[in-house]
Image (tube, rainbow, N blue to C red):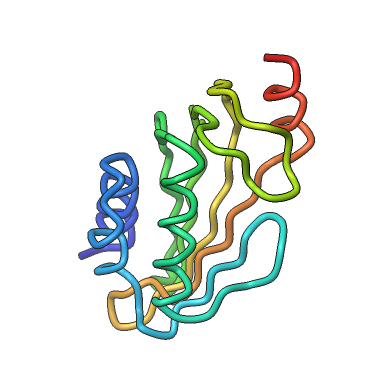
Length: 134
């Protein structure tokens, strides 16, 4: 698959809440760099992260734009993320089913056709304001 095809498959699996579909596109030693917090290393840590996210949030990627260049070892995505806050996440405001919409940027590294790094970036202050005022 091309970088664009891999990213499209990754986010299609995300929208289905298909953790195994997402994990199939990752290298075993994948590094996940979240917008806040410490990096996670390896598929088991990413699997735990996805289970946590699916428990606390119901999210959909809307209108993703995939960005690639001549280097097939890099790619990026920009999209709107629409979600519902289902279960209180540690250190965050209480969840009451609030909805939110955020712009997200994600950067990827690839090796041998698999994703080796996922770096997500979004505005946590914007998210917090949305869920506190809902």
